[in-house]
Structure formats: structure tokens, C-alpha cells
Length: 500
Image 1 (cartoon, rainbow, N blue to C red):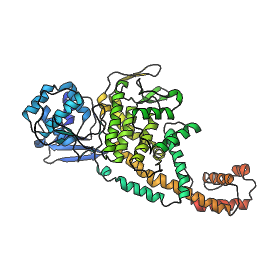
Image 2: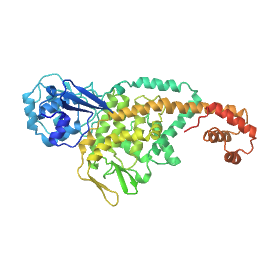
Image 3: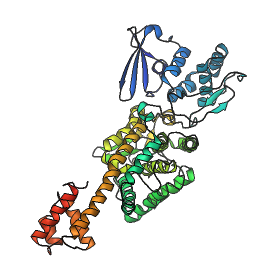
Image 4: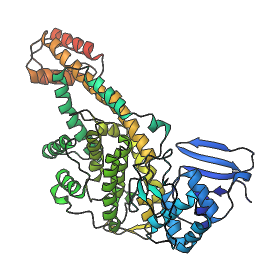
């Protein structure tokens, strides 16, 4: 018996040489008399006294994992498909007919492998939730009479995102967030809000493209703005709607008419060649995964799933599946707005410029994407040919199908808080100060509207002063005294602050 040896899922992975499926909690056998827990970056390492450790055998380790470590569907799918025969599960059921963990294992085995266990349906007993509702966000359970299980996960065996309950996420209240947003909006005149919202739709559009280093022309910008206005009116999470959405936001030469049919990847060109950051699932897996994602969306919407968790599951699930050749990132961020609006997190007609925050904090945004992609890329064996086409030697479908998106949901919460407390508030405050400054400047010199706005913009981008070059080019009609008065008045209204 080795101390500090793994238990639960880690034991199963090591013992059966399974491909790595990162999990949020890991148990190890320990020499001390009491349990010790170390927490760091959302992960837990639990040191368990040897006397409380399970026997080093398949069923004890499996039941220990379910009871103490939650669900690792990625690992279970590998284990069940490649190492456990249906007859083995039937023997567990026969030996432990009333065991809740065994009933869950029986259900999961048939659900993940589509193999039937040679055991009779249960005739009696209470229904048991598949996922622990104190640990996971769940949907209303569907009864499965065979094992008397309440299936309360949002997805299917083709794709099923998991989001754990954490103190941070449980503290977020959808209705309270909406009220905070309304409180911010109600501080400003209606006319100013109308102008501000028009600009916020434009800012969200430009930021979403900018994240991908794209500068859209006026036509593409207007198209995307029009789509954002539709976000609160239509449900875009269906195959037909998503394909239409993709066609409307990408260059028409790269419009898709179905899910992608080739293996794509996310990468960048360097002096040494192409650097691959992420390889999405094989194309033959995409139809089933996208169908399941859309089904999960419907279950979460109807089942009162927390809005933030719902939006994270759909949007990050979408971008990790990467079902199109182009436009996946923009659609991923668009889906956030679609769900926020339809679920009432955003007040009617209001958009949260969340892409602006993501664009301003690229490291944080990339970290959410890489938390999923990095462990996978360490595992995948792939090759690029001379034309940049990629092939994967041994696909890993289980990894894509059952993502734990808790970290992404917490990251989305951080972005939303900053969007409300900083991006939205500062934008509205800037416009209010801008209007006030215009009125005050006109009392000094009654400049035409376009020249007045140009004066304000040039000064704010130059620490509140008009440069000699710009003055000679645009404002040579003003006297030195007028320029000094205009500059001083402008600085008073903006407190020497310049826009980003």
C-alpha cells in the first residue's frame, strides 16, 4: 500500500491507462490521521487517511469516485467502452441491487456505451438523481424506469456540458444583476440612453471582430448590428438559424451550408510555420454534438437553469465544437447576447458590451479557452501537410463530448461584472460629460456641430489640449485666448481623463 497513491478517478486512469481527463478534485492516500484539503485555482487535492481509502479494486474505486468526486464522464466513457463488459455490470447489479452508486453506474454504462446490460429492470425503489444537485446545476429530471434514475443532466451522450455549483456562482443572482443594470440606466436621460445604446451595439460589433484581428467594412458592421438587435427576439440555437447566422456574418465566399465536413484547427502563422492552438472534434462527430448542444439549450431554457451557466454552456460549448470553417468566435460571443436577452438578464433593448471587455483583457479571455484546449493539445497526435491541412492520428471524442465548463462560467461572471461596473457605466458617464461639455463650449465659441465634436475628440486624445498641428489644420480661425478657454472648460468636464 503506497502512500500518496491516487484514489478514485485518478486510480482508474492510472490502473487502466486511460487518456487524461482533467478533473477538479483528486484524492490521494495519506499517512496522517485526518483528511486534508488543498485548494488552488479552482482545483482540490484531498489527502485521505489510509483507513478511509477504498479497496484497490474496480467497483470500490468507481463507487468512491461517484460519491466523493462527482462525475467525470470523459473518463467513465473510456473505461466503460474499452475495459468493462456488460456482464460485469450485471454482476454488480445482482450483488448490490439497492446500491444507489451501482444504479448510477448501470445507467451511465448503458447511456455512454449504448450497450445493454443483461439485467432485469428494477421493479421498485425510489428514483435517484443521476447528478448530485448540491454539486451540479441540473435540469428537471427525466424518469428512467429501468434503473429508477432521474436523468437531470442537460445534454445527451453525444454532448453533455457540466457546470458545478461554486460559492462564486451560487452568489450570482440573475434578478439582482438585472436590477443593478436598470439602476445604472435610470440615472441618465432617455435621449442620452438612446444615443448610448446605438453606440454600444456598434462597439460590441467592432470589439467582437477585433478579438479575431478583423476590421469589418461598413456593410458587415451594419449586418452584425442588425443581428444583435434580433438577439432578444429570435432563438438562434438551432441548425438552420446558426447556419443562416454564419452566412450573414462572414465573407460570402466562406459561407457554409451545413456543419463543416473537414478537420479544421485554430492556429497562427509564425516564422517557423503554422502554430496550432486548438484542434476541434473530427467532422463526423460534429452533427451529433451540435444536435445535442441545441437540445441542451432547450432543456436549460425550459428548466430554469441559471442564466449565466446556460449562456456559458451554450457559447463555450459551441466554440469548442467549432462547427463552421469561419465565424465560430463571433457566433460564440453572439450566443451570449442571444441567451442574456431571451432569458431577461439584459433589460429590453440593452446590450452588454462584453466583447469590449474580452478584447481589453485578452489574457483572461484566452485563459478560459486554453483551460479546455491546453490539456487536449498535450494529448493529441496530429500532423500538418504542406498545404496546412491537419490530420489527427488518434481522435479523442470523449474529451470534447463532456466538458466541465465551470471555470468558463466563473470567467464569464467576471466579464459581466466588469461590463456593468466599468464598461457600461463609463460609456454612459462619458456621453453625459460629452453633452455637458458641448453646451459649455458653445457658450465660449458657437462652433458648428461637426467642428465642435472634432475639437473635443482631438483634445481628449491629446491630454485635454489641441496640438499646434491640429489647430493650424482645423481651427486656425480661433484666437489663442479662445483655444485656452475651450481647453480649460473641456478639462473641467472630463477631469483630465481621455477615452480609451
